[in-house]
Length: 147
Image 1 (tube, rainbow, N blue to C red):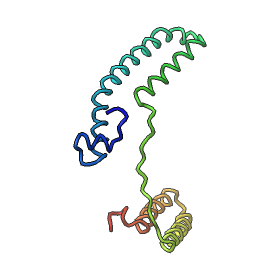
Image 2 (cartoon, one colour):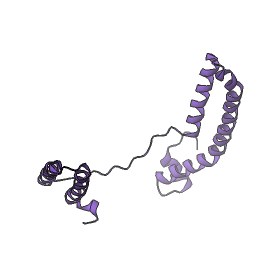
Image 3 (cartoon, rainbow, N blue to C red):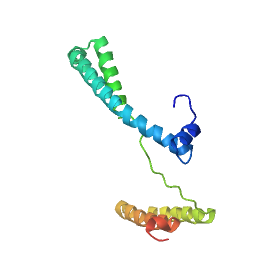
Image 4 (spheres, helix red, strand yellow):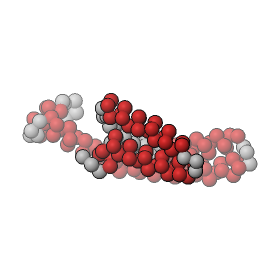
């Protein structure tokens, strides 16, 4: 099927559309290339480990060339194993009405002023912590379990 479009492949192999041909080609590539890439990855990891074994003692003796090779081998190992992949973060963004935001900010200011009137630092911290939780719950009810 070399040189054919996915639409032509789909028609020849009787897939409903080109998407079926694309999926079939991708599955075939995964089956044939994955074992080869796994084997290459393992071989490369063994080679990099050998570089570390050979140059590690010289690096500990502050040999500059060995230090560079060790650091490069470690970097290559990290890339090979996917250890430096970006960290996935789940960020929740709340839409908040300006009026609610204003009330919450005013509440924090009032709470801060009230807490600062107390002579005992522990009492100030406790009042502020409890009040802050209530203000956050009021501004973001879904965080407090309310809908």
